[in-house]
Length: 373
Ligand SMILES: Nc1ncnc2c1ncn2[C@@H]1O[C@H](COP(=O)(O)OP(=O)(O)O)[C@@H](O)[C@H]1O
Ligand SMILES: [Mg+2]
Image (tube, rainbow, N blue to C red):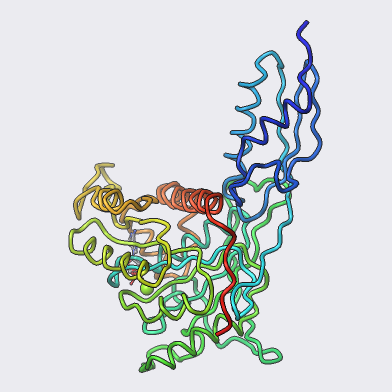
């Protein structure tokens, strides 16, 4: 009969696996619970945060695999994941409680930036993370339309009560301890009647963005996703001054001209010290619903090549599909996750984004607090 592994030996395996939020060893921040180790069975309890909800399943599988490899003589390995609370800290002078603030930008309009921004937010929320959306495209706010919300938000003691989006339920039930939370959304589109043009001057723009960030009752968030206006650096500059951003996602289409614009957008973010977390290629290809044949309407692989050249992560591609446009027009962007064709592409982007954040957190010092403005 083989001898039983020690709990210390099991723990040393867990010490070699990174927490998918902090990137630090699971044993560092009190995330390892009970460990049982006998000749017949290894059972461990690991606490993970809602920030990494989309990676729970993958992380659990990885821990199991590592334990099985390390202790091949033990027939049963069970890993139980439980929620581990880790509250967000207040960011910058505005006191936003969020762990990751992610700007979604592009060099030009019409590449599907808002669709991708909203889809990323919904994908993370459906996995069980607490997510909010700030529509910072004050020139052409389209988030209200994409999610089917309207009307002026109520004001409570000088704070804005944001509209709340129901992101819908995931196809597979969430792990115990996770739930889909209502998503607070704030947009200039809720404040200005549709069709009414606003001419923004620099200081007004800065004021409007700061006010939406500071005065909205977001509640504690894992992620704030910011839908940026195309091109111009004004809002990126404002954001970089108001709070520490985790980084930016740049959306483009595979066409050369769109890629050139994306390269400019990347340079713009880097100029204001916002790290680029990765690139998404939207409208990458078309699968004909009648024949199943793939058409590379705008060429193929351009964004992935550009990302490689610029040494930034490539987060994934999204096909051009009639339902994605229909869902957007109907204010039901969340339905992209009920669509078996679109879902895997969107989920891949969300997972890679969250995985990349953990890797960055592991190598970077904690977020600096900003000097007083
Ligand atoms: N992958 C896609 N497949 C089909 N239609 C898309 C896709 N991505 C975006 N669209 C549509 O393209 C239009 C522009 O998208 P939008 O997200 O508003 O772009 P942007 O914010 O870059 O201006 C919308 O009608 C949207 O529904
Ligand atoms: Mg837009």
